[in-house]
Image 1 (tube, rainbow, N blue to C red):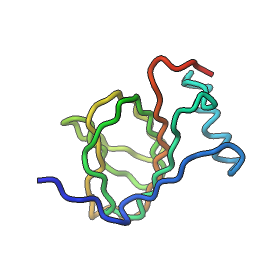
Image 2 (cartoon, rainbow, N blue to C red):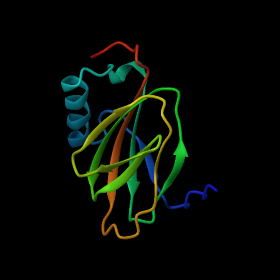
Image 3 (cartoon, one colour):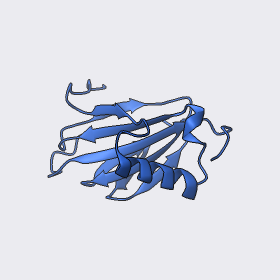
Image 4 (cartoon, helix red, strand yellow):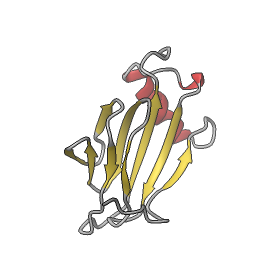
Length: 125
């Protein structure tokens, strides 16, 4: 059975250039270094905040590719049936696989995920 996400499980903020210089630099560096699609082409970049180990996201999938940068406390990311330990600074790229973030009560701190969602054939920067 699937548990509902907690109302405070994650807080999502959509990145827009010009709001935070440090985040702009990080996003544009990742786009350039990994040859990702140009963010001005309209794909989605989200910032997810997980305040503690009880924050969770039920398994789900998107019709696009996802690059996720994990910042902060380690958390498990499920991708299909695999459990991937995402530590501070880790990156993962996946396609349309099911993915989620289960509860990890022993987690002692918060985590931010910078999530890039794009089509595989979008023009690169």
